[in-house]
Amino acid sequence: MSLDISHNLASIQQSLPADVLLVAVTKTKPLADLQAAYDAGQREMAENKVQEILEKAPQLPSDIHWHLIGHLQTNKVKQVLPFVHLIQSVDSLKLLLAIEKHAEKIGKPINCLLQVFIAQEETKFGLDPAEVKSLLNSPERKNCKWVNIIGLMGMASNTSNQEQVKAEFQSLKQLFDQTKAAEPQFEWLSMGMSGDYELAVAAGSNLVRIGSKIFGPRIVKNPSSAEKIK
Ligand SMILES: *Cc1c(COP(=O)(O)O)cnc(C)c1O
Image (tube, rainbow, N blue to C red):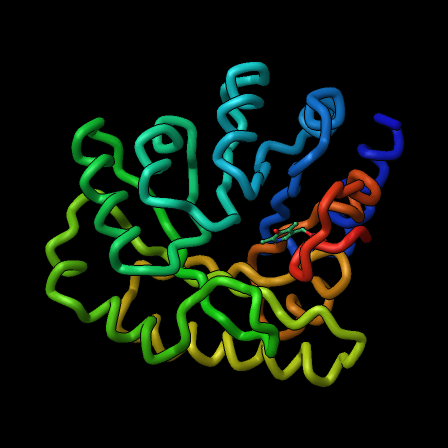
């Protein structure tokens, strides 16, 4: 099993251009799998639930960079901030301001991405392009000193229609480029998962979030439309 993990990591890494960051999505996976990835040199790991970061982080080496990639409720911000390296799933001004408030309290600057809705599915969280612009230009955001918005994250539709997926990634890349003109600190365009990361990288992604292609399929007890057994 751990041989598979290091092999999978190496072959994905090899297929990626040097400037694309590989983030291993470890949700639902046991600590032994994460340790195997760590032993193979992987330091960027992502969870979609606060609870899983809180459980796993203290039991693993402290130089892991934890990314939060799932919806974050404002009442969990305080707990997760000490552990998190990058919050990729900021989807409202209210959440951004809650992060700002707690980041200031603990004196830790926090890097975030705005999650943008690009898929044609109802279930996924995210801002639309107009909401991205109004959030970035809002006076409340301009007053933020601790929270730093350094890019965008998006998920394409879960479809076999490659042209549609490609068009969705291209639309996010276009929004990224437009926004970066006014936000020079923008650095990361996070798009691409196990099934579509090649299309995402071709469209300009520089951060891919890959789970099942590294760790194998996840078994989910109550699959929702957004998270089926893969
Ligand atoms: C689960 C998840 C991934 C990884 O999905 P795989 O298909 O297993 O690679 C990427 N991004 C987000 C936001 C996720 O929730």
